[in-house]
Image 1: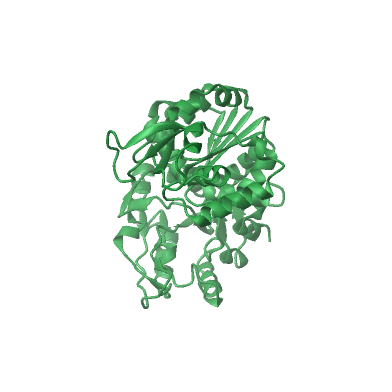
Image 2 (image 1 turned 90 degrees about the horizontal axis):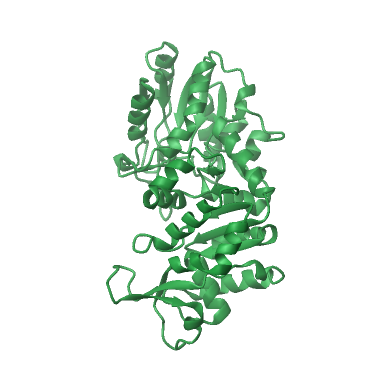
Length: 427
């Protein structure tokens, strides 16, 4: 945490405190899982304890049409469900501010916020929650509109706190606003960065598990992890592309771009390829729409190599549970000193068993540090292994990051300070 100003150092008494969270857990107007909100409650309570007057904000969804730059303001992407949750959870009176869009390109007029801040100062409400930050014209802008919005927003507050570790992209509310106010890292941001040190300086041997739907987006963090980890395990489309590139397999749904990216990764990491632990059993399915008896089967990698390359073999939709009974896999996992997991091993809507088997095997190593990142990873863990997940939340050996993309960005750059919003706090 060197050089990063922390909110514990800030004078918040009687100050209007603008706080950016990553409460992006609303879908069609309803909260999917309050875990990210709950993780930020200590920051909110600390602001109250120190006499601060909080203005909260987050982005929700992707309301911007990138082709036209128009913004769709809809109840589906509203923060109202978050306000309702916080009011009930903390027994507070919060209000969402009603700011109207000037045009189809988003909200530009923040003047109604002045009246809301007066109500906050008068004690008529406990906190303010701004509308979805992505409803504002300047939030994702790449031009002067970002600074115009950030400066206008900052004029209503005295202090800025960034507690949105998962929102690693440099948008107006995570980056530009820090130019105009005293800026600090929130308690969750501090906690996430501290736990990142366990990835950068792990108890060895480190087993890193990474999956994803596009290989090219993961080349950077994979290239860093394969150097630092003793073992690298791949999952999802990333593993499929690796198998296709290495063994010249014709796997349905794996395009030339993914294969080329996998080949580039292997060429660039040729001195470390022995660290990749190949999961020997996979689920091959002829359908990605349904799990129908007779349409899928478990195959060993050796069988895939023998298949007719002129015909697509089908989709590989999971690393089969049998992989996590394999002697070599069990040995690496049982000897690990640390795990970093950013992975759902397959298409879990149809085949969750591979992920379940892997999470269970990791849990059996009681001495290792277990660092999990990524919303899908944590959601699948919680959904399919609720008993183990409940115990893990109170186990000091486990840590669940609120932002998988933020962790991977930090790993690629070699430090949490590689993220632009964190750099903004330092500056």
